[in-house]
Length: 218
Image 1 (spheres, rainbow, N blue to C red):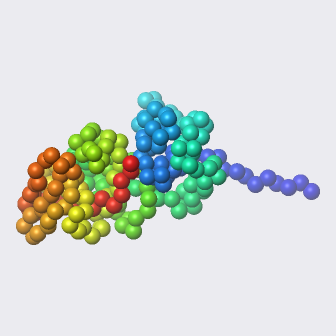
Image 2: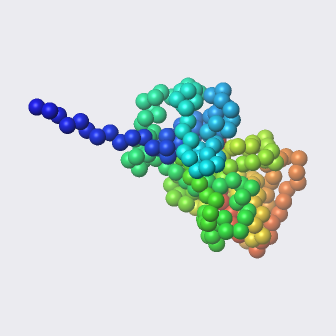
Image 3: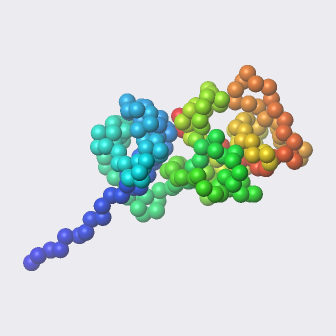
């Protein structure tokens, strides 16, 4: 009697990269942070490196995956489980955009939800708010709290309290990341993450939306 072998579905480019993103997130790291910890070039796992200039898929090497697993103290079995969870729909991906691009027209709708082009996706810790999105920090203006390459998970639906770190978008398109000191019907009082700067007050009428930062990579 001849048994018919069960067909095995090949791993896809997207599944491998999604699993690496999830591996980084579970370690509390951004993809670039995981690469650094693994002793690799910080750009090894960047989204910009996943597709070549002529549109071809670029796959991570087995060596880079092995080093990433060691850096995250994870096994190949756990990596395979991340892929299985993604296939089963148990994984979680959220929209991702660079903070520098988030102030551009069309990046958000009137409710403060991701809209338009430029958004990609990244696997991050789950949240009860299905409208969560992620922003990637660029530059050093928010150091030492957030550094270049860090990723913050933002929830438009999470309750906001005094002392929470928030993202505020003005009606003029300016994006501000700060600590909420006080919120009234007339104004927002914000404390910059850079302790050398003075507190800032924004009139409520100038605010398009405010959302709480739930999580940040290191």
